[in-house]
Image (cartoon, rainbow, N blue to C red; front, top):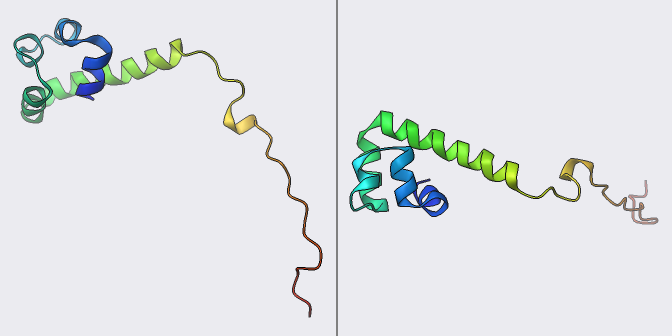
Length: 86
């Protein structure tokens, strides 16, 4: 999550959106993970921002040709002569 957020927003914007020292002063994934493991309230903020980012990316993505649920699946004709003879 931290890598995706820092890649999407950059460390500076991440520090503005969630003003914690691990994002604003000499940020790194390792220092952020160390802090977030110990701090539940900050971890919740990061998780919330991550979910917001995913919704934002999905909303701004170009529409797909057809959703998977509506795509037609070709029918395979039954094979003759391969059934069990009784």
